[in-house]
Length: 388
Image 1: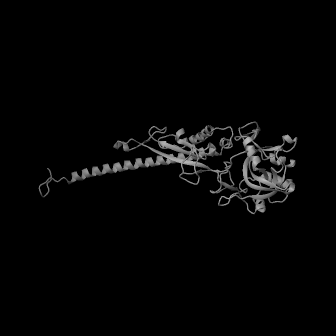
Image 2: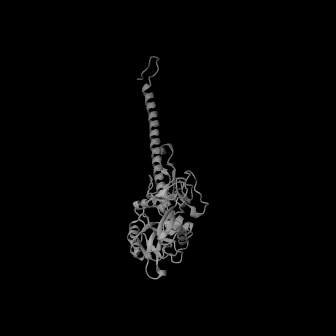
Image 3: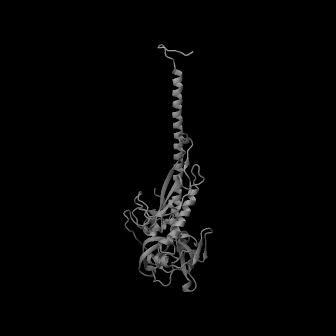
């Protein structure tokens, strides 16, 4: 029989509580579903960001490659060839980063943008209208969207409410920062051989490709590899374009020079010469700094073995723009440095067969000193950094 309260009405408290409980459970389940699917969206967004970060850094590493160096120096390389390398590196790394529900993250050509940014402005857009040799940045966009190669994000509980799929994307930009102000030989490998800036640039732009470097075996062979060499001992240029520097030990004999060639100039010798263990060519304001170091023009045949022992290695070459004096009284004005791989050395035989052949490289190794106020190195040295 139904129960009555004091007013004679049927007592429905238990039924009301049951209905209220069901309503609350529905709301709680809805919030739980929302929480899980929103959390799922957030996790996928993090996966996409990690993929974009890694892909942009990998793509930007091509900016320190041989093809980009040739493009900067007017070589027989097109922008499309460099972009192909950028895209291949970016897309390969992107696919190694999966997001939930996808085996790997696919990026397409429109998702990899190649151009130039202002390194002093973190929010500057990528400019593709400048000369390609000025390109310094790669942006990668990763997507989980309807119609994208990766597809949308499948929800777990939202379909209860009629929402089956969601979308998300991420973007990252990496750049080649070449605002290099100096070099620390205690970390990198500084050579005691100097070359004139004019001769170096002439060699880079109009050198002859005589040697092939195999990065897989770290060996050098005769033949072309698409990168011309600079000859540090050209017989037809005026005396003084080449010199053996006396760094920290006075007028060096063959043993000291050989040691500096084989092992690099030690920090203590550089400090003896210039008062510091770093060669900084731009001060805090970006103003140029020069060094004056004595030396001797020409080469000594007894150094051939030491030079050949470094074949395949990358070294830092001090660059001068002027020289005063002659012979043992020569003084070189050192204005910077360039990096190159040692390809061959011949100091004996007929004059036309002699030379020290160096292959210019874009250097990203240890020892570089950076300064946001320093000018561009022209792509000759720098680091790959994640900008945003």
